[in-house]
Length: 172
Ligand SMILES: C[S@@+](CC[C@H](N)C(=O)[O-])C[C@H]1O[C@@H](n2cnc3c(N)ncnc32)[C@H](O)[C@@H]1O
Image (cartoon, rainbow, N blue to C red; front, side, top):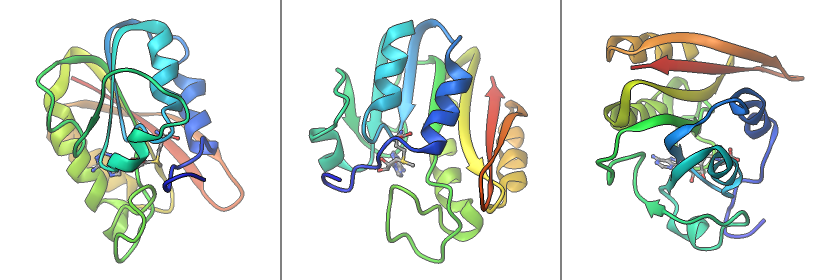
């Protein structure tokens, strides 16, 4: 693995399986990592942006796309997107030792920071789709997202050996 790049994994493919029919003008992949999802979005959206807090990862992405920005969540962006996706760092951890996976206390702290920024960039009737886990306090994250004014539901669940992945859709 180069520069701590998170390789496309079960959670990445879980998102892929659920965004195949999404089409539109503007899409954003927060936490682009390898660029796998960003590249996929480029097939169905006319303008796609990928952000990541890890600048080294963006410089050497395996799946290269245009419009990559190194920043927290969508902090650097003024555009309103039809679709935002994020394979969140959702693991419940005491500290943030690996930015690719560690979500902090209850797996809520870092996802909250990402959502606080991203919800401002969703177009009216646009969607934010993110993945979290049964091992984190996913209900707290869903409730928090709803409080921001988004219409939130669990879109899909996927059982893995030790946890269940939870895909959340939040509509503006
Ligand atoms: C679980 S990986 C997902 C990578 C890729 N999207 C995928 O699905 O395979 C999470 C990614 O989010 C990035 N990240 C973590 N915190 C972030 C933040 N606050 N803002 C933007 N990106 C962040 C990490 O550097 C990492 O590349």
